[in-house]
Length: 191
Image 1 (cartoon, rainbow, N blue to C red):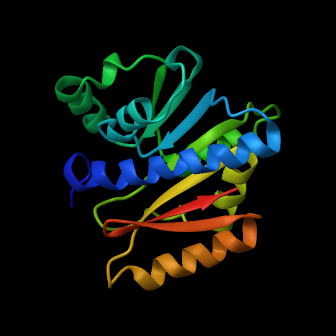
Image 2: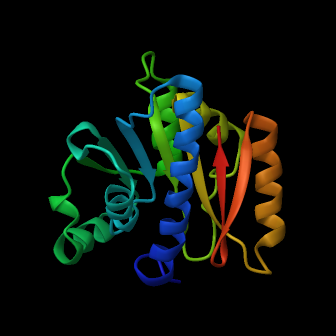
Image 3: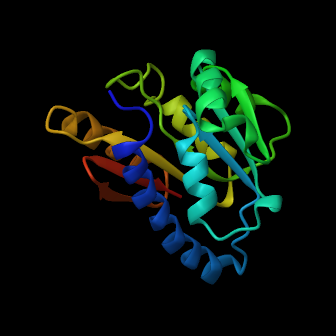
């Protein structure tokens, strides 16, 4: 299963272009679209971070990105071959994303994230706990007032039913949920 480059890059480029539209809505509501804190769950080789930096018009010096990846070998590979270690203002955390999110949410003081990107897969499967109500509630709690959470979900014929159920669960938890088809995946935008 492709985890970086090629089609994955195309999927995230389309999804991140959609964030610009959300920023227009945010500008109308809050008069402020600065994106200072970003959380990436499923960092992999860092494609999504590089795409974010190149597609979103922000001062990179003002953005702090926390990337969470469970596999230290992927981080090592990303640093060696994809320049992952040279991305400014990127803090890499080697951890299970579900545990990381739940631990961050349970802390007494939370510094909210303006954007949370969720790209969690083990092959074609979503890891246990990444679809549960506790995880989604914790993500919601980590999101700032103007924050946005974006999920990348497979949407092939065999995955469609599971993804549709996930979208329904998101609609129960978040006030605003929109979806956008991106190649063979579905991007789920939650506010």
